[in-house]
Length: 165
Image (cartoon, rainbow, N blue to C red; front, top):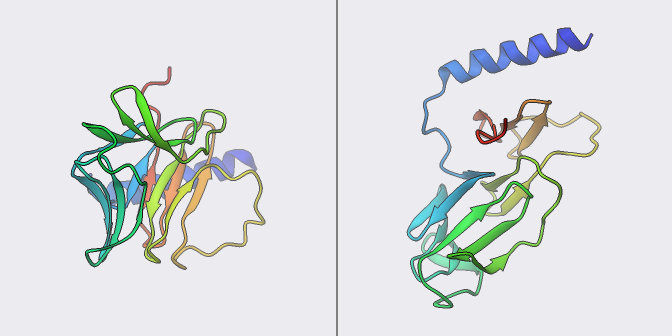
């Protein structure tokens, strides 16, 4: 039964990934990825930007609705989605702000959702398995190799840690 499930997962992933282009997701930040000053995640009229003034801000149609409160607290800042589940703004090696969500090592993703919420997802510990894809939510499945992220817009991506041996 496990090999049948693994085959189905591999087949679906292979077929889906073959159809995707490299730059398909502008609203996701995976473990090991960064947003540098001026870079952002976007979803419709929403922008989640690491500004050059070191402030991380969520905008709705140009109006700020949330910020990290790190405006001009340092220089040359960047946002890091770490493999321990913590989302951190750094200036060099100094942390200015953190989500304080660290856990054990794993694969995580920050999603700027269609409902304007920015959410950090990790692997689920338990679920009923009754969720529906396409309801605007994010589904993350994980096997021993890498988690698969299925966003509410039906965009699928596989997350890997290229540094792991």
